[in-house]
Image 1 (cartoon, rainbow, N blue to C red):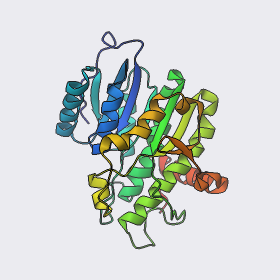
Image 2: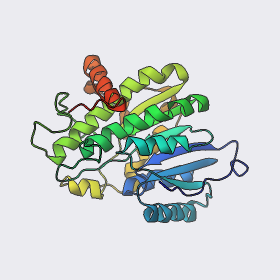
Image 3: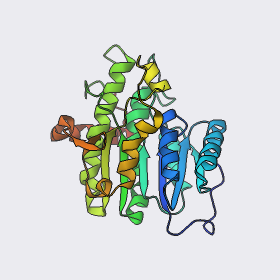
Length: 281
């Protein structure tokens, strides 16, 4: 897919911390990107699906923060080939990866590869992007991965990840995906800790957004309020010092899902099978 031209290496501030934010044209994703762009010496890359929306988001962020080091890349994060293309054209460091993109279609949909859309976007997208960017994160370390999950999580069925046997319900599928994100955060944290890469998950807040509307919720917090915890984990020392943890409202919270080491291991292996081309239905 076409991408907005990247800044040349001559224009890049050698001291800048580089952030990548997925789902960055959504209400909360754009708020995350804008708050990061407002921090000193930051370079922010928005990963978006639609070029017109991406251009508008970049313009609004640059205009509001005065930070010209904001750009976008186009990728559909439900598609592994798109993620591979994004990583292949990446140059320079990446210090913080924020996995935020999510969808909540009201009817069961599939990607062109035949994967249920919520699982592909909300779970495999996080897995594939983290896995693909691991070499870059290693060379950029100390580095961080922040996974935007939710307190609205549970009901994961490891034997029916794509709602082939169960009746599809977008709320049930969303809760399952957010449980999976919290569990995968623990799995990646253990794998990446030796390389000085922290991986944490968080609940961002109840934001008034398209996603919450699709789930039947109105949302009572502004996008900036929802962005506060992900941005805090991306910029505050605690986000580097802690790994494999789950946070709500800038405080660590107990996550029973992540303590089930066998289930975490099984989920990680199932996701890895998708990466190896062995679709698990």
